[in-house]
Length: 460
Image (tube, rainbow, N blue to C red; front, side, top):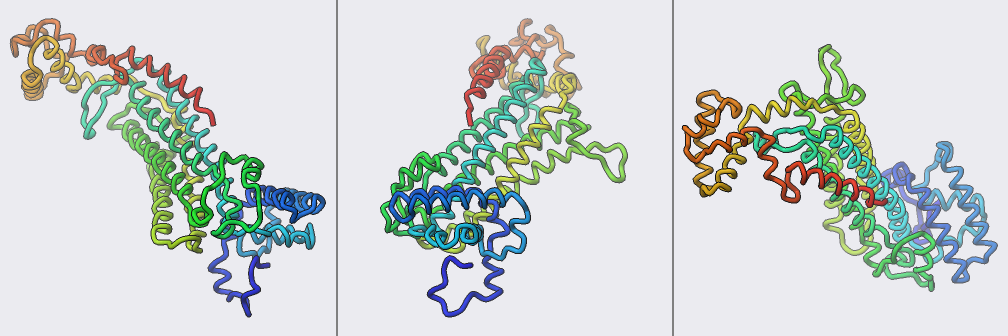
C-alpha cells in the first residue's frame, strides 16, 4: 500500500523499494504515530471531515493497532515502506473505507516531524532522569568520604590539594549543565507541527492550538516551510547528548587512571569490571572503557546529521529520512552510558590514604606557601621565586614537604617565618580557600548542601 501513486504509470523498482524503505528503524515511532493520528482524527471531526461515529471507529481501531504492535508478530512479513504506511494499512484492515479519510489535509512531512517530536520529548525526559541518578550517586559518594584529600591535577601533573567531595562536585556541575541543556532541547522539541501540510500550510481550518493541547505540546510551530525543513530540534538533542557523553568520558578516563596500580586510589566494584581470558590477575575497567568508547559513537551521530542537513535546499528532502538512525542510536547510547555510570559510582570505593599520601609527598603545597608569604607582605612575584627555589632545593636533596623543620625553612629564606611551616600540610592550605566555589572545607560543605537542594528541584 502506498500513500501516493496516481501520478505514476508504474510502481517503484524492487531495488528502489529496498533502498528507500525505513520500516526496520522507524517502527519504533509506532506508538507516537498512533497517538498523533488519533489526535488528527479528532481534529478532522472538528472541521467536519469525520462524523463522530467515524472518528470513534478510527480512534478505536488505532487503539487496537497499538495493542497488537506490542507483539513482534505484528511486523512479520510487513513490506510497507515506513511506519506511517504500515499504520494506515492496518487501519484500513480494521476500520474499512473510512480509513481513507485520515490523511485529509495531512502530509507525511508534518507527520514525521510530529512523531519524532513526540518520541524525542520522552527521550529528553528519560535522559534527564538518568542524569539526576548520576548526580545523586556523586553526592552520595562525596558523603562517604567527606574529609578525604586528593591531589588536583593540571597537565596530568599534581597541582594543588583538594577535597574529594570538591572533585566530585566538579562533575556534578558538568552533569547539572547537561540536565539544563537537555531541558532546552526538550523545550525546542515541544512545539506542535500538524497543520503545516507538506510545506505551505493546511487547506483545512484546523484549530492547531487545540491539537497541541490534545497532544500536550507547549506551543505550535510558526512557519509551515520551516516545519518541513527543520531538524534543529534533533540536532539540539544530539549536541546535548554529545556534551553529556564528553563529561562521562572524562570521568571514565579519570577513574580508569585512578583505579590502576600506578595510582591505586579507587577500587571498582566486581560487577562493573571484567577479567582476562589469559591473565588471571587482571581486573579490567571495561564498563568505563565502554563509556569512553561510546562517546565517539554519539558524537558521530551529531556529525552525521549535521552533514546530512548542511546542504539541503528548502524544504523537505528525502535525505532527512536519515535523521532517525543517528538519533535513535545516540539516545540509546547516552541512556545506557548514564545508567552504567551510575552503577559504577554507586559501587566504587575510595582508598583515602593513597591520594592523601600522594598529596603529602608532592609539592601541591607550593601555592599555599607562596600565598601565605604574600599575605604576610612579600610581593607575590618575589614569593613565587622564593618558593620555586625552595621546591628546587627539595627536589635536588630528595626532601618531601614533611621533611622540613621551621628552623630549616627560615635558614633557607628569612621570609619563611615559623608559622609558615604549617603550610607544608596539604590540609592547612585548604583553609585559606573558603571563597564560594573553592575547596575550603566550609565552602565544600556549603556547596554539597546547595547541590543536594538543587538536585531536589531538578524535576523532569
